[in-house]
Length: 166
Image (cartoon, rainbow, N blue to C red; front, side, top):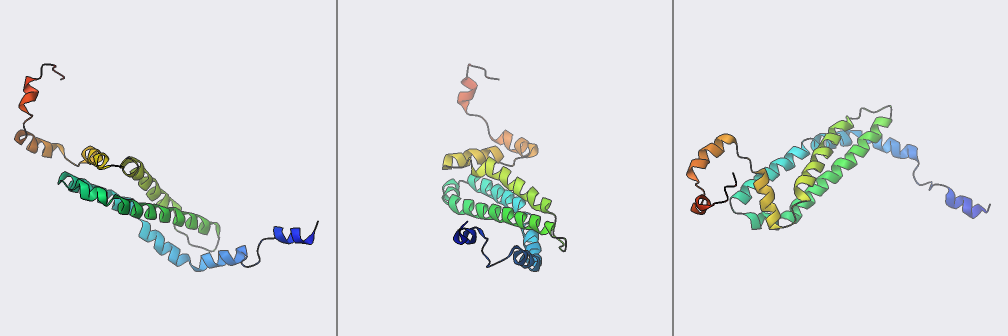
């Protein structure tokens, strides 16, 4: 076998796996701090969605929809970081000398963020989509509905309806 071929097949000597592992262990505290900062990511975006719903109810649909690219970008960046730190923490656990945080913490955040992505961000493409999703998720309690209901009568045309849908 030619020497050139053998040299091509050898891994680059620039950084060994041991050196990479040592670097990760040295940066362990930074990783742990980042994991702590990532806790609550899903709740942060769930709260943001609830605030957006209220703004849509106030008639700010166009403004909220115009901000969608920035909101989606922030969401995607956070989800990407969660996945990255999950991979790092999982790797840290493989080293015997480390005190790595439990990766399940991040896995729960990733799962919750993924559910929010599926139920909101993947479905929200247009301003009409935003209004439909906001109506679906608007946080009204039964007590609030009971309070509002008597003040809001159905249109008179509903009473003339002969089809009797109910």
